[in-house]
Amino acid sequence: MCGSLSRRIRDCLSSRKNNRTRLVGKDGRCNIAYGNIKYANHYAFVADFWTTLVEIQWRYVLLFFIGSFTITWFLFALLWYWIAKNNGDLYWQNPSSDHKPCIWGVWGLTTAFLYSLETQTTIGYGVRAVTPYCPGGVALVTIQAVFGAFFNCFMCGLVMSKISSPKKRGKTITFSEMAVISPKNGSLCLSIRVANLRKSLMIGSQIYGKLLRTKNTLDGETVIIDQVNIDFMVDAGKDSLFFVYPFTLHHIIDKNSPFFEMTEDTLHKQDFELVVFLDGTAESTSSSHQVRTSFVPQEIMWGYDFLPIISKSKDDKYRVDFSNFSKVVPVTTAESTYCFYNISSHLPHPSDGYDNQGFEVIEIGDRSHVTTM
View (cartoon, helix red, strand yellow):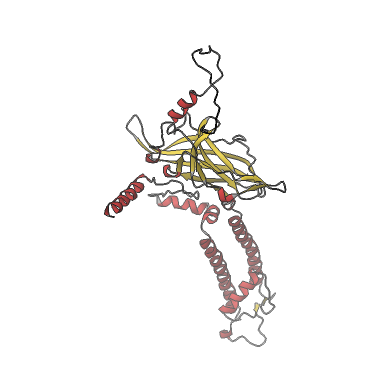
């Protein structure tokens, strides 16, 4: 029991050591923090306040929404209170019976706040109203009406921008949890599955990848994040995909691939992160967006392939079974790229040479014990 416990502890420590710190999470969020930014540079976020408001979280948008309306109502209420005070309309000023007020129904700060709210939101209950006896009151009600219309448009635009953010459309693009390495069409390929959960198309979809790793240059410099381009393709091509059903992306592992030197035994000991990007435009909203995910070595399975998920139903409709979207099955695969291509090079090819007369042709009568490879 003690030996089993110690082995589990060693395996846990080894897995933690091998797990690379992700730059891009499985959900596409970037794991990066900016430090030592000059204080003056923070004003750039204020200058670009629209992008700042669109990118902040919903809780802060709602707080800004409620707070901004309440503050503007109160500031205009102070102006209405000041006008009523100068005209002697307040209750503690004891106006005479023949007094002509500037605003009907405003005799204190609370009623001034209510009148400011009704004016900016164009409610107009009919209890409070400006009179034509004060030019200042007429001018202020005009200013607040114009400001309220502009401010309402701004806040509605902010909420609509948050709701229609392209990031929300990207949530309906999903990648497989694992990547696999297996033979495909005579080549050893790294495969990833991607699906569009909506029936609306993604126009002009492009798929590419980046391999992130730490690299030591010949000058002795250590590059913490070295980026290597990874090309992906599908059976239908690389650009302008007809993205209406799930695709399996293939990266051919050849001599130009950074995975060429890796083997089944050394793959999970490597230190890299494979980031996959999908760029496209939503057909319904015409908004461009990017979806991304990442894979670490422990999420790449050598010698496995994805289960098929597309079938044809009895009513002549194509059916996608998402229960098998990330499921894999073991397939016969060489332990390394060298072995795969060496084995492939020794497979029978059309012969243009001489026949070897030393071979004898025999007949196999019973084929029941022949193993199919």
